[in-house]
Structures are given as C-alpha cells and as structure tokens.
Image (cartoon, rainbow, N blue to C red):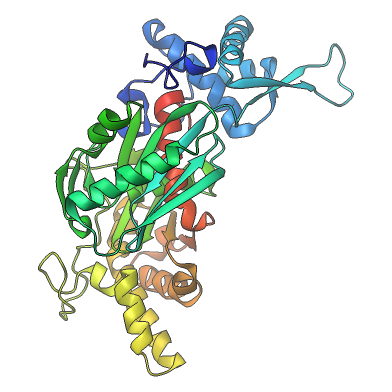
Length: 398
C-alpha cells in the first residue's frame, strides 16, 4: 500500500495501489470478470465490485453479487470498506413496484478522488487537466512547446504538472502521462525523437519529484484506453493517433498489446509504397508520417491550388494510411479502427478514402464489415486515457 498522497491517515486516502500485473500496463485483460485464488482474492474482489459499478452505474448490493459471482456477505463487507474510503456512496432506494423491502442503490462517488492527466503529444503545447473518476475535465492548464526539446522539454513537463497539482481540489489518486515515442512498462521513454528524448525515465523522475503515484505510457496507448473506457469501443480495437507523429494503440482480447520491445503500433515509420516520398526524420523516405502527420498534411493542403486539389491531397494521404492498415486488419481480423486527430482534416473524405483502400486490399468475407470512424472523445482523448491509466493502476477498473 502506498503512503497517503495528501499526508493524512483518513480512510479516503487509504486506496491500495495494485500491482503492475493487475493494471493496464501489463497487457492483461483490463476488466476483472471472475474470482481468483484466495491469496489474491480480496484486492481482486474489490476491483470486481468497483468494475461492476464503474461499467453499469447504480446497482444494489444484490445486483453486484449476482453480476460478480461473489456472495452477498462478501459484497456487503467490501461495500462497507469502499464506502469508508469514500469510493462508494448510497444513492437511495430503487424505485418501481418490486415486492419486498426496496433495495438501496450504490454508485461510485466520481468526485471523491481526482487524477492529473498530462498530454505531451501535441506539436505546439503540452496540455494537462485535473479529471474526476468519470474522466470529466475539472480544470485545465497548458504550456507552449514550440522549439523546446531535451531537458528544456522535461522541465516544461514538471512546470505543467506543478501547475495542475495546484488545481487539485480532492484527494489525488495519481498522475497519468501520455508521451509520444516508445515507452516501456516502467514509464521509461526509450525514444521520442520529436522531443529529443532518449532513455528518459519519465515515470521515475516525476515520482521522485512529486512523491505521488505516476503512470506513463505512449500517447496512442493512452488514447485507446480512453476509447475503451469512455468511448464507443468494441472489445478488439485499433486506434490510430494522428498528430505531430503517427502511432497506434491496440486492444486485443480485452487487453492492450505492447509488443516484445514496447513498439506495437509504431506505424508512423513504416514506408508505404515503393514510389519514394518525402524525407522522414528517421532517415528513410516515404514513411507514413511524411504523408499524414498533421504539420505535413496541413502544409500540403495550404499549398493546394483549389478545393479539388485539397481533395486530391486528402485522398492520397488516406490511401497511404489504408495501405499501412490493410495488412494489420487482415492479420488481426480487426472489426474496428478508430482515428484520433483533427476532425476538420480526418472526417468525411479522409475516412471514406481510407476505408475504401483497406477494403480493396483485404478479403471481403472477413473484413468487409470493418468499421472505420473518428473518435467521439475529441482533443481530450489522451488526457482521459491518462486518467484511465491511473484509475486502472490504483483501483483495478477501466
């Protein structure tokens, strides 16, 4: 158990920090769904109760027992414990004309704790927010980034985090950070070329600096967790994040996929086509990032001589994305791909042209019903994903 983050010993501060094996960072299933061995039972069963309410909202103790498979006695004990910690609250009697004594409904008190979320993926600013347990933004802050890399960028992260911590108005559950680049399970940023970072132990650095639980992950991996918890995601999902760079997050079989070297979803530096293309920051020519990264795509759109020329730019870029995605859709038999980025560029024509290319390169009987859509979470998707990372790590739910 971690030390209370607010320096007190009040019950509301005594929230267990779950082991990495039970969090979104491990690659295992995100949502607990069954009982486990006795030695792991209590923490897991707490998460089962919380997940039941986190997913569906108000339920009675009997409802929770039925949905989790736990006994009513166990549920009652856990509910008492969670209410003492401030995580659960009674909402009053259930309405309706059911026989017998009316049941008392429970729900998570979504304002009982707050999370600091930080998004480092934008090319112009570092964004941050204080969020509640429902992923709602309570307060915001941001700092300009243009031209800042290396240690100066790291100092800017610290400054933004300090500003956000000053805005927290409830017990703090932790800090979540979505960073560009390749990030391992310990929150070490192995490489983030756009920030000039190599082997930066960002999670450990922020924990040492602020003394509260910190979770750091790749921004696309954070975004796919937000889509899973707060969006309209199916069970298996690929989310493609298009911004300063291009990356993807994958959920398969109910859990995130990171890869043996934590680079799953790093599609931005895959060369698409054999006809050359612009020089990429990685040294190759024709990487996907050179076609669809927002700064490059915006520049091409500005240079287009007409509306028809703009449409041609978007079709070409979307086609390149489709070329990159088709083998992934085919290999993993995905049913849904979600795009995250500026809607004014990626909506409409871009989505349609990408889907057309994927379908032309995959087998219709197996992939013809693929859904390709924009996220409904907008520009806050990484911030909300950062909150999910902390909520999953601290409470075991998502």
